[in-house]
Image (cartoon, rainbow, N blue to C red):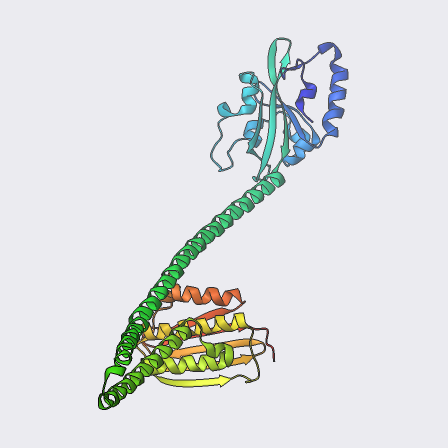
Length: 404
């Protein structure tokens, strides 16, 4: 029950009419006992002059036990921390000492057994004529409400912490993605530069040499009619030799073109499938790196893979071998390739110097990052096991839609 129901005028003062005191007392008694809130009144000394049953029981008393007791000393003597609460600071007493009504929900009342409960209370002065003669206080136990508010605050704090953590993770991932994109752009430009250099240095020089030889042939043939038979025979021998040299240069050019095309996309991948392409790449690598090879293939030769995952597996395999060549300082490499339960398992292990696991998780480990992104695109993952002095083992696991 809100005490404003008892207050006249609206300024929150309760004006008592002596002429109607018996009727007022009866109605007030019925009103106080019908509410679940606690209600009590105090005189100017702070002693209880009335209290309803709900209020007394919230404090652990029966109403007669409270009458005449100093309510501040009985139930409002300490803060929630246990620190003493002086009655000069008590908002309840200020209601009649200073004529200041209040509504408080941040304090506690103390029970008879010494336990405290969170309380919301209102205190209004009782006015008799023009004189303040005490205060009426309404209060309720808000422990459950406080508990729910605290739980909500903890949930909000936890949610904010999780959102902040996830935002940080997304920001870090976005930063890594930008770095990876820049790295891939640089790799692409480096590859274009390498191919342009090879075309210029090797094919360009061969074509220039062929052009010079063709001009030489043209001059010799144009002079052929003016030569004697003996001179003509000698020139024809030179022409045949020149043509043979040109044929060798053309063959070299064809080989160089084939090698450049293979670097861009190995034709063996399209013609003979992934398994043959992986074995060919492994053999090419160990020959150029002068490593011993342990090759294990446990795949049905009739099984062929879709083009997109096959190319992803091939590029991941190339990067695995590249890591061995750049960093491992190995003498032997073991490759195990198998398909089991619709899963491709490709393991590359070396006996090199190894590295701490943190090296493979570094933000600058773009090769590893690129492999993982390729694998993740097809639902796969890269697992790395390595330790300084114990080599490294990289395993690709990828679910594949196999077609016989």
